[in-house]
Structures are given as C-alpha cells and as structure tokens.
Image (cartoon, rainbow, N blue to C red; front, side):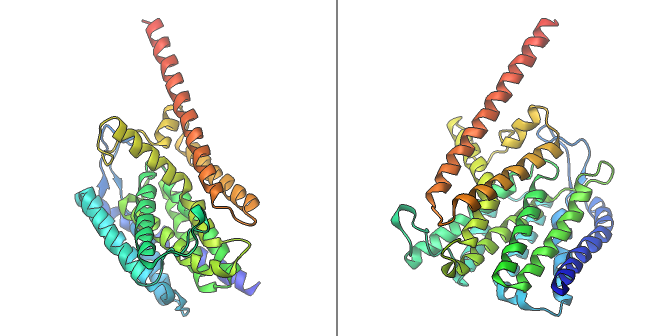
Length: 355
C-alpha cells in the first residue's frame, strides 16, 4: 500500500506541475513564434503552440532531479540522448530541419545507445536465429530505433493520438517495471503518464489547445523504443514471456505498419517517401467522418487488442505470430481505404445529382 501511494503521488505531482507549466509555456511559445501555422495539409485553422513535448521533458527532468531515488542513472545514456532528441525536435519545430539531417542525428544517438550496451541481441527464434553477431546487434538496434522513432513521429497528425499511444505505452512500462521489481523505472513511467495526461487535457481543449510538436514526438518515440530495448535484457530469465519485445511490439506495431504502408504507397506513385501527404490511416478515418477523439480511441483500442492477442497467444512466444499480425493490420488498413473511396464516390454522386 505504501508503494502504491508513493507511485500515485509521483503521477499526481507530474500532472499538477505540468498543468501549471503549460499556460506559461503557451505565452512564451506565442511570443517566440514556436507555433504550428495552418496550411492546406493541416486541419486546424489557427496557430497552435508546439510545447507539449517541451513541457513533458521539463517536468520529468525537474522531478527526476529533485527525487531522492537516483536509480534512473542506470538508464543515463537513454535519458541524455532523449533530451538531445527533444532539442533537435524543438529546432525542427522552429526552423524546419531537413529530414536527412534529422535521420543522421537519429542514427548517431542510436549508435551511442548501442555502444552503451543497450542493444537487441536476439531475434527470438525468427528464421531460426537466436543469438546474433555483435555487428548485427548494432545494425539491428540502429535500424529498429530509427524506424520506430519516425513511425511514431508520423502518427502525430490529429489531436490526442500520439499522446494517447505514449500514455498507454508508459502505463505498460510502469506495469512491466513493477513486475520486474524495478521501482525506480516504475516511478519514471508514472511521471510520464502524469505529464502526458496534463498534455492531453490541453491538446483536446478547444480554447487553449497545444500540440505535442516534433520535439514531443521525437522525444517520446525515442524514449519508448530505447526503454523497450533496455527491458529486453531481462528477457533472458523470462522463458515464458519476453516482456521487452512484447513492449516494443505493443507500442510500435500499428505506427510501424502504417508508416511502411505509406512509404510504399508514395514510392509506388513515384513520389518521395518523405514528402508529407494525407495518406496515413488517421487521415482516411477523418475522411470517413470520425472525430479526432474517436480516431484516438480506435487506435487505443487497437493497441489493447494487440496487447490481448500477444498476451493470450504468446504463452511460449512465437515470433512468427508478429508476421501474422502485420498482414492482419495491413488487411484492416486496406478495408478502411476502400471504405473511404466508396463513401467519397457516393458523396460525389450525390453532389452531381444535386446540380
């Protein structure tokens, strides 16, 4: 009970402090023009402050620093490099950094993480591969981090989506840390849950809305994937269920599948895979008439379904089930796209009949 109350205090304190910091950061952002200006590709009509990620980063940093528990130093490489990503994302929000430069920075920090010993060391039996050569560990770790970070960044297209995915992810991280008996990591998970809850309160607001910004999506996406890789080191003693790979799949399966689908679609149409458009799954759902809240709820429910499938059907863990999940989600996305085309066609027919 004592630990439960202590953990609750951490989350509540992060929420309250974030709620106090956000109004101040909104004013600063408006003065220095750290805002998202509307254009033809965006759904909002007014300039919105891009301070969600900064608020979360500042609040978590302050609370970690004043905490008597310094067990977070065990993941110091992750924390340092994540704040590098926060800084890079803030510069991108302000000056629009070229994609190739951001990718280069992501590769550099990924190499730092891999060098610190936080690496993917096994394929869990996929294609018959378990232990890997150290060079392949580096390559795979860098590839997974950069892919996951960019996939998460791309889902930040509507209110609440990226924040909700991160909130659910850190809640799961909190539970896994408790199961593993690592109370220091569990506290970190709750700090992020509390701060993200405050961000979502403003993100869904009509009057005082704020956005996560590239600073937030790069910061949170990078933290989540690196923490997931860090947890995999505990998988060796968990023959029944590997929590690390489970966490990574739970958080990033849907964003990665959607990103791969979008990149492939852009390339097939002869366009740059990095050129922004409205081909993501949340854009198709918007065109079907779903609200931002309903789309966010849909994604959260899909994450929960992913959780149930993996937990129920992976008692002995078969990595091949992941490949099956991949094709199932691709099929679901295709159905949504077909429905969108059908309703668009139907709408056009009605408009022609009314002429």
